[in-house]
Length: 322
Image 1 (cartoon, rainbow, N blue to C red):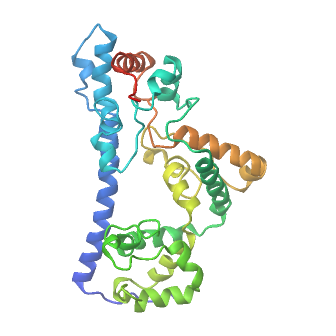
Image 2 (image 1 turned 60 degrees about the horizontal axis):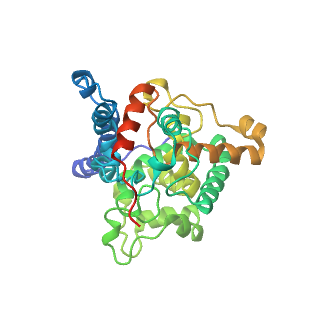
Image 3 (image 1 turned 180 degrees about the vertical axis):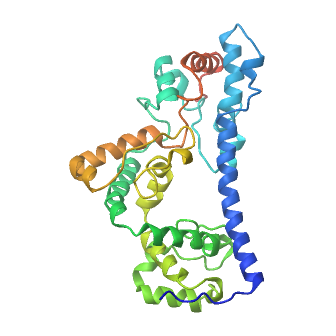
């Protein structure tokens, strides 16, 4: 028999629901900002400004679709990137435009084809990210996703403000704590599940007791989510889940936001067929195409419009200062 939920004071329910809504609102706001930056509304400047000069057309298109992240002049300082804590490439100082052909730039924008060089890529960082995701993928089919999803929902409302959404101690309120909240990815190793539940109920150090912040069964779900956290999970959630789903089984078509596309199921049959080397190769390819969260414009702009943007970038590009 499932335990009977105990009554809760209305004020606690309101506070908790409000915190969940606040996090959901921030996520929705971020999605809307990206959508606004990359998919302008019907009053698109290109529809109302018939310009014969490709550079002039490119300037208008760049401002409408690219400037939000890359900045008005391409220095990676756009307002959308700042709000979402992204780090778009500096298209000027890094020499991206000068070193790549028009065709390569168009393929990058249209299809996500990686350029032959990267402005910020580290071979060691790529290896570490690839290893982390490849190690995480086999956990997808054996995870109790109903429990982990419930735990994530509760964790983001009650714990993330201090511990961060991925448990690494980088929450907005945790930054003001002295000492700061621990990184749960390392701290959890010292505790059993029962000990973690006791910490949540009774508190420890600067962490207050949270017994009254949870309904029956929610603490168990939070512990399951804390156990699930890893570097690989964070990278997968950032780069892969929007197409493959949090469980690797894909995302419902109605929930796919452009430029996301339906993706194959990641499960034991696929991983077995690919083997360790094949899995790492696929992961590395995905990171090279998708890292940075730059949208591909296959469903937004056509090739001619992208070439106009490239024409403007070339016309306004200047050699980097030594």
